[in-house]
Image 1 (cartoon, helix red, strand yellow):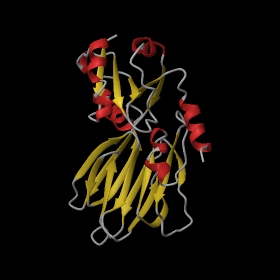
Image 2 (cartoon, one colour; image 1 turned 120 degrees about the vertical axis):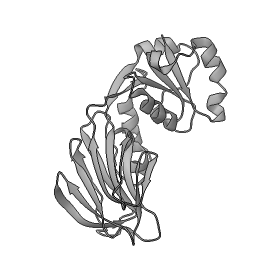
Image 3 (cartoon, rainbow, N blue to C red; image 1 turned 180 degrees about the vertical axis):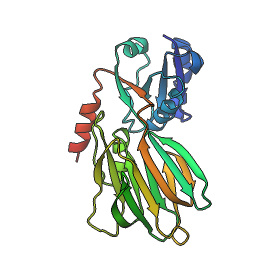
Image 4 (spheres, rainbow, N blue to C red; image 1 turned 45 degrees about the vertical axis):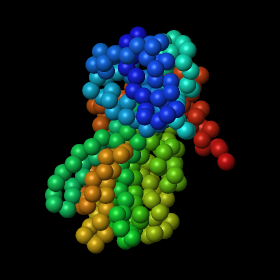
Length: 252
């Protein structure tokens, strides 16, 4: 099997780099049948972004910390594991952000699109879903739209819901909401079009980010799913994502 290894820079990942390449070889990504990401969830996200232009699956080997998106690390039997793996298809979000100078920025997000304040001033944001205003003023540290893949990351830290992989919903989750104080967010269909308008962005500047891609001083953000882009994730048959997500919801 033609494998392209995408190996994180941390010591734990680099310590196994030579052995993996010696055992299985390394091909250019353009000639690969699969990408094997070695590291943590950050390495997995980076490899998934690499895979978009080549439509090849990504298999993660955990050499990070939590590694929620990863499989257990083992040197042996990698080809057999790849051939026997289950495949899950997910779709990224597209963020279109317009800044205070009317510049437009477009980025993809696998985990989430988030908006967050840049100063001590709270952000004030209005929210539209499919061109209908659902919240005229959300006073908060920020707000995000998270995919099922990203629901166990920043979204979960902000007390958002865990979404089962394969579910056709997105999580709309506030970050430290002040008004309305009791608003806990919403679940929306994955085909929904979300629009955030920043109120008084000069006094209350905010940034928007698509995963790690940040745009500063924004005044408007549009978020929608890209169903035309399919990201292929491979998992060991003994590494059930559904079971992982259930365990996370019942962990204390």
